[in-house]
Length: 246
Image 1: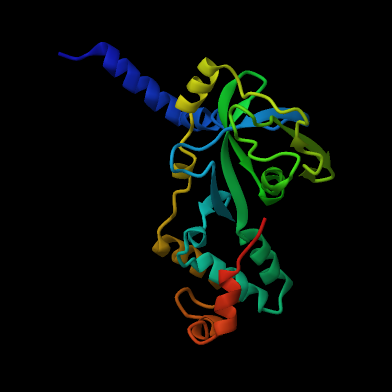
Image 2: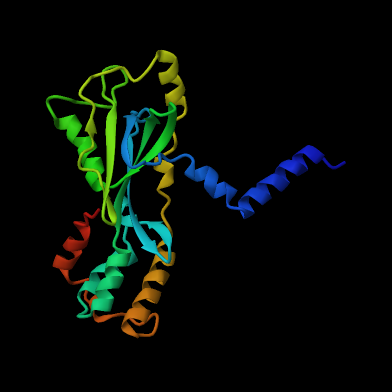
């Protein structure tokens, strides 16, 4: 006998997926920064976990790919990024800029507007401001639930890009919330480390080869002179290992 209720649930799931509902639900987990000042309370991580997850993002064909180098693995797209800069061509350099890995950090934070736990996704500069608090003698561990600080995110869009230079912790040290609130927040922590899902090496290599073929006019699969030298170019390898971008 057909279970109509279960069938209806499945139908709604399919309809939501087709209409982008699944993606919309996922985006609701993230903290949306408004123009001006927003206040959050950055939460500590789960036991034995850092309070943040680090990644670097390659943007290719309007899709984001986590860079394997963050985990210490090889990344064909990063290799291509540096090879393109060795080509004396503005087009090659434009492509290099477009695939540049950009650092991203995920944190759990309480949205002080409604008390919900959101995923705070920030770039290297804003994350640096958060880390500054830990080493500032006037502050300390701002994730401390009993003696920490709320953090003000000041978004000031100047021209094309937003600026967060005015962001800072609040000057007054406060409890994060009541015991009941804190317990609920810690039970609601998002799996920020699980967000960093690495694509396969083969998929990234295929994308890198396709991009390079378009830029150089070389048939896909034919190695470039730069790639042939990678195994012996120690300086170049060290340069790749020191990758540090925003």
